[in-house]
Image (cartoon, rainbow, N blue to C red; front, side):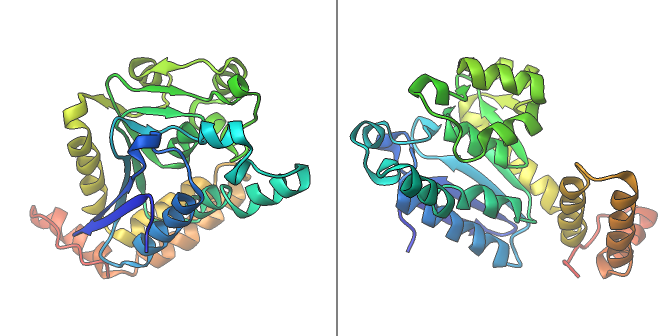
Length: 265
């Protein structure tokens, strides 16, 4: 049973909604467990080809629960050794699971993405943002560091110099600045957000699913390897997809000037 989170799959697109609106969708232990479970469900469902992640209410994700921080409770309880273990066994399960996710995932930022909330958005592949949302890596503002690996993911999203400025100042930026620095791919009116994210998801889902998954895997795994390793990986993946029915159907459809019948085969 999922707690503090909703999951629904309709056709080729699954939607995960963080659902603690009274806490601005801040993390709870139950939410972390549920998020990992929802990602597992989407990965295992052969009908699902893309995922949209959003938040309920006015915020996307407020990161850590400030009341728990103040009280030294929940994921903020314990001494240095216990806290380190809680991070490894708790919140860090999210970036590890997303790093292993082959299906594309789009963050639909319906409102503020703060601290670990911004980190979660950066762990996704694409980001659509509602105008009016504020984003920030605000850990230094509460005397913390990005314990979920946020400094790593932010740097890979906007580049090291810009990421360093954002994590050291902890300042908030608006949707337009986020678009200008490449943190988000699209900014839309709040009422258009989910439709825009779904459009991205369906555009991806219309392509051959194995080719999409292997292209995503190649992009991430080629990021910091030498060119020979990247080329070897590309050749291996191409050898797989070039022998699929979807590849042959896609080529025939282009030559026949008709829409392809992609079946995931």
